[in-house]
Amino acid sequence: MAQGLSLLSHSLYQQVAQQFTAFPNSQRVLGLSGGLDSVALLRLLHQLREVEHFELKAIYVHHGLSQYADDWLIFCQQLCQHLHIDFVSERVNLGDVKGESIEALARNARYQAFAKHLPVGGQLLTAQHQNDQVESFLLAAKRGSGVKGLSGMPMIKAFQHGTHLRPLLNVPRDALAALAEQMNWTWIEDDSNSNSQFDRNFLRLNVVPALVERWPSAVSAISRSARLCGEQQALLEELLTDDLKQCLRADLAFNIAGVTAFSEQRRLALLRLWIAKQHQYAPSEVRLKEIWHNVALARADAQPMLCFKHYQIRRFLGHLYLTPGQGTEFDQTSTAPLLLDQVNTLPCGKTLTLSAANEGARITMPNTELTVGYQLAGSTKLTPAGRHGSRSYKKLLQEYQVPPWLRDSIPIIFAGKEVVAVGDLFICQQWLAQEDEMGYLVGLFA
Image (cartoon, rainbow, N blue to C red):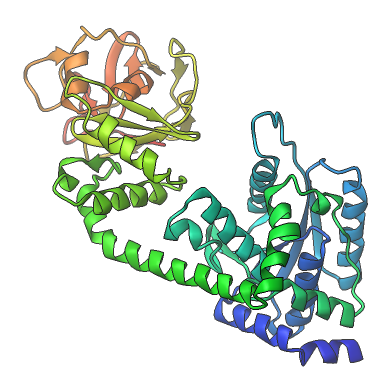
């Protein structure tokens, strides 16, 4: 009891409690590694839960990278049992790490595991502290990042179907260590923390101590710089939001003509924001300039494309498109039956529904089984509903401004060998339901 009372009155507990008051949530999930940082946060949460009464679950992610990982799992499990906190472990496989950063792969795997256990609207908690923020700032500076990169980690951000809060971000690691020792808490030490081949460990073991020895307030000062960069980035995005809205179509295609008259700095900032809004990492300044000069300004008859690690930038009809680095691979010669009034999951990665309705543009009740396929000769003549003359399938795709790289994955609805509808682009005239008859609305979703 005395230990609990001393924790309640501790300034660090009060500081962290303020973060939870500022960002309340009734369902919280903690990433627990067993190290000092996450154990301290677990202990603080255990005390705070007595006051705020929220649900709490701790997750240990087993990467399989250390021979001691099983021992760490057992430590975390027993600690949570002692504190009466729900606990779950997840084993992840990092796959082939050749040519990849083990740190990045492990981090991505962790957050994928966290997302599996985060309730809708829930709050993910991780234990990054002020020293971690300093390391992020220095790594970004080493890469030559601008204010977005230098802003490091935000205190809170959207994550999957909830939020991600870092309540210790303003707390120095020394303060956590002092509290843990005062409270006689136990934790584990990751043997990889002493391996300076990892960038963060190199900074933690060699660079940051040297900075602090020369300038004792270096950690708090650099952390403040990261926060100020974050504020500048937020202001920049606020000022650019209206410009970006004017440049985008409903499908998020970026209008090249809309930014041609802008200064280079403003244009590149809009491109960077456009990419970030689609949950992708923005490229370097050099690569952003390549997007503009080699893709946006490529000759009129070209089909330019610039590849990045997880996505591609293409141009079509005066617009830039961001597309996945690797599209869904499937057998384009395949056909499959379509079920009425049900969700049909298609090989192309989309879902298609045919919903009974008596209004709206809909296909007439079929007297034969409907199927979906993907192959149709470009010379095939089709007449979209509401038109009198027919045109070739190739010309219609051009008319409907379907980008070339999407044309082979458009699901085509057939009745036998007769085309009923082309995706959600159009219904063929002879298959359009009359005003007074029931029919089926076509719904196509990514």
